[in-house]
Length: 140
Image 1 (cartoon, helix red, strand yellow):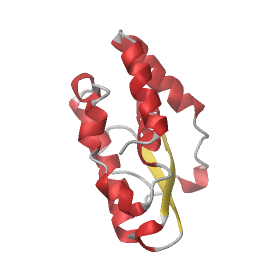
Image 2 (cartoon, rainbow, N blue to C red; image 1 turned 90 degrees about the vertical axis):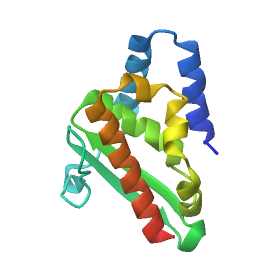
Image 3 (cartoon, rainbow, N blue to C red; image 1 turned 30 degrees about the vertical axis):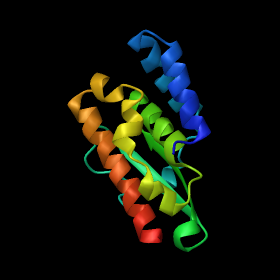
């Protein structure tokens, strides 16, 4: 179910043997994302459950199950900003009904992130996934 952008991350991770290289790649992905305007860094976009500051700004185009899900996001932690980029590759451009079908733990496990993130970071990723699913469910 994963998008081509996510499959490219999977392939890159298979190529990079060392976890430090993989972390660097995730951080570089985060650096490549456009920054979120400060006007959107408000309580309504803040994700609770993350150790660092995280904001996700969903953008739904259309209505009903075929509405297209997009989002932008930002964090004050470089690795978390990279994790937002990974989630963006996993979800952005899907319809809201497709978002609901993504098994994020299974997809992210393909990257081995679950084994290499601290429990706080893993909780933060779960909180971001929950927010994405909640927004999509509400738009569905």
